[in-house]
Length: 314
Image (cartoon, rainbow, N blue to C red):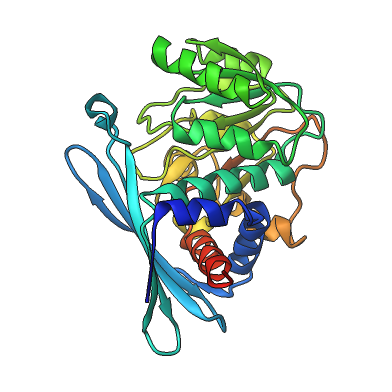
């Protein structure tokens, strides 16, 4: 058994095409080649813990992932995210590795999934990128978008002036032209590729303000309590995409829109089916599209295995 530490994981990730790994993960899931039980969830007073697990049929490993979010940790000088992944052999149940990633693998695979969603659903001509949220995910989503769009013009929304200013400084160093706002409506007014990355429990973007040609990737709402998008955004969308339809029936933006009665389940398609060519993605630049990414264990399987195999060759 290997114990793999965060610095080793980061070194390995630098040599892995994570966007391609996530495409493979979603395609396997939607093709029925993955076994992914319902998410285990522990909601605490100060935070939340998600347990995700599963395997891909006829492959070597299965994975159990524990990831937490404690969103008041910033005041304590601590990261809001933490966790680890456990990699087991399917044939024997032996543990192959403990990946002490401190939540980093979850952050990276989520950001890579956002890039994949944009590749298949965003308009070809991205005029401006809107980022809702200034945390780790808000940073990583923007960095991973470099692989799928040449646009470097960014508008970021955040709740605090200090957080916004720091975000602007850091992302400018990565080659982006960043402007800031405290009014989320400005994101919808000027950006046609938007990523929402907050743990908000009340909608931040208004359905009446969305314009033709906009794509939104929503990654923050991964429980039944969270919601970043007004459900009317999904009602107005020409294409609503789920990372997992079964999971999105219980959590995320699709769950909220279904509960509100403004969309029907049969109108939702899975990202993996779009990747595999079984369903249409965006058909033209005037469509409104939404991708709801609640995070699926098949992503954890792919990223854990990729890191393990990369380090095993050294």
